[in-house]
Length: 223
Image (tube, rainbow, N blue to C red; front, side):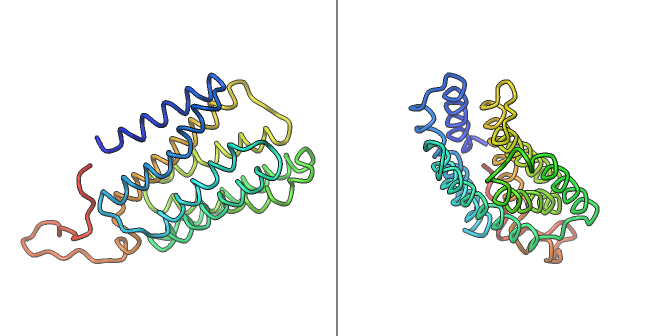
């Protein structure tokens, strides 16, 4: 895990920047979060796939959300919509999520939008579409592994906090809550995907030559 140290440093700087309301620190650290995880993923032996593309979209979203409020918020939402769609396609190619999990997230999506519909005002329709993709991503992550499922849930919590803020409800420590859950989500999803063995691993039968588990040629290198 030594290769994740740069990500840990960037995450720490970002959280300090949020806690101290330092724009400089946030601009220095936040745009590096997803790229550092992407670099770690590729160095671990994974190819550039749909998940990696999702991290690229997340980078664009992170930069957009550093800009002043207004159109930048919708641009950032658009980038993160691209990230969620990329994750959904990649995760579902790996393995279909359990139907009860999908149903549970859809119920949560409906309830959240009913509660926030009035306060969101002009953001209702963009949030409706984005939150659907977000919930489907969290459900799809449950089909990858338990770690990915937790990562998807953290991503949902992070964006739900943003949605609450947009609707006029800001919790104490809002910024730190949003970023800490987001950082945790990215880390868990990325490391879970690296461990999953790629999009077709769940469909490949094990090949045994010596009675033991088959070694995969695309197994990620030890970090």
